[in-house]
Length: 371
Figure (cartoon, rainbow, N blue to C red):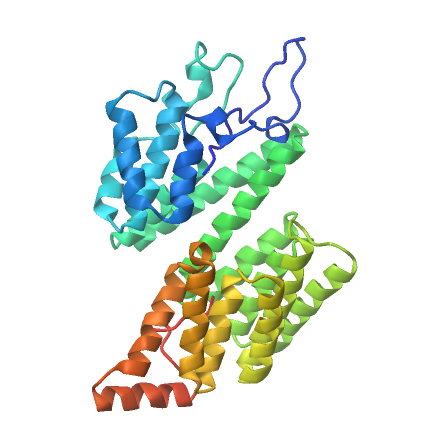
């Protein structure tokens, strides 16, 4: 979890000239950025959220954090841990203590003795995102949407600002953040079947510099599938394959791109209820990258639709054993719990009803979710 950047904007160099893009020459290690930050990151990677709370509490009690940005870094990990532990009320109280995230006190230039020559916000982007998402957890969907759209404007402003000043690396980082926020917004609109807004947001990205991003084009195809535009989705997925032939992979590695193509093909098979072919596509993904949790999750669902519930469960259980760090996410775990219920529920009437749902290729999205 990085800050907007420890030196978000250019910093005057010793010879009097403006330094190059600050994000092109990052700190040597996480610990160079903040006191024992690598330890917090490792705990987060392992999902040791209570240990993070203990570490943050200890650092605060012993006054181990000397600089304003260090307090914010630890604050961010503390809030993230509370979110993961579903203590949303505590998260809201913590965030309220910061008041205005754009207050001058959180600007580097407000602390010239500590950060000579630096300017810009020291608020971590992840903290801004959590601040936007948390109202939904408290039943305030509209407030979350309002904050996300505000964050989207914030990110787009940064993209334009960095680009106009020739800070290519920073502009690319903020463009990825823009895409991330758009995906968050789309997720909320999709949950309420507001498909028109989703398509509009994706098309804005494609017209605003993401036309060569295969992940964004694939996202459009996925939305088109959900609104029943099969031909439109196929056209989007074919465009992604064409981008691969032209070596326009965006920020994806070759393996990531190939898996994206396979997952796109699998989704088309899924819509046509050709689960055997879909499984084949997902297996290719898993062979290339055993930690492709989307392929793992969706392969398990396809096996379940093929009435092979025992193998479906094994796929998810094996993933949790092999790659627990990536497999231990909410979608996969919820699906596994639902499959346990399908397999082991004792009440014969409930079991018969659930089995019928599986047999017709339908399980409520509240129970089972595609990755």
